[in-house]
Image (tube, rainbow, N blue to C red):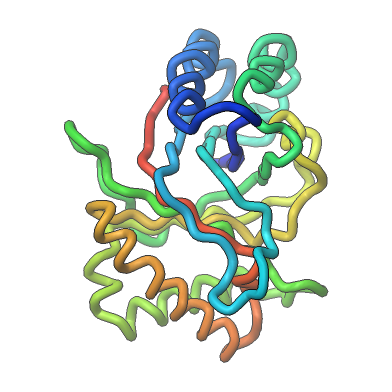
Length: 246
């Protein structure tokens, strides 16, 4: 399974509310009309966010994200066929210019590792989902960088009972290199130095806003102690609710 993840922000002059309405009801409807070989399409509508690290003299990462798109594919063949299809190139792609600030889009291809199964969608309001974009430090990454990320997460939960109790699901979407052509569908530039995206699920806004900042600080401390896998100054997190398109 592959997951194409894109963090985007609204084009200049557009309100957040208008952006989400267009993304959901217009762009989402176009995609649902012809899913091609996309297995699942999720929009994560952002209601809050945090960027960089405490103590940074200035923001070191580009900020202002309104939504995070997730496109699930069975394999690379399905992804390639979808992105090269005329419907993607002539309908879905061009429609992005109506709402997406294309130059600032950030996209990466990932392979999900489910470390705690996410909760099933409720009949009513969905759980809150924090998407943590984990940037690696400059320089060559150690061969076991993904293992260090997972180990640090597990150590935080083992050491902090409140974090373990609050978390309702956890998936590490680990970066898969070599998909630059597919990623350009969303805009943006070259492949970023992101290790991946962690998806953390909580029961409510208050739970997420209370527990994730503490979790992130603990993750940062463990990265510094055990070997750097994480550059907090260039990482960011968005707080969102899932909207399933299909």
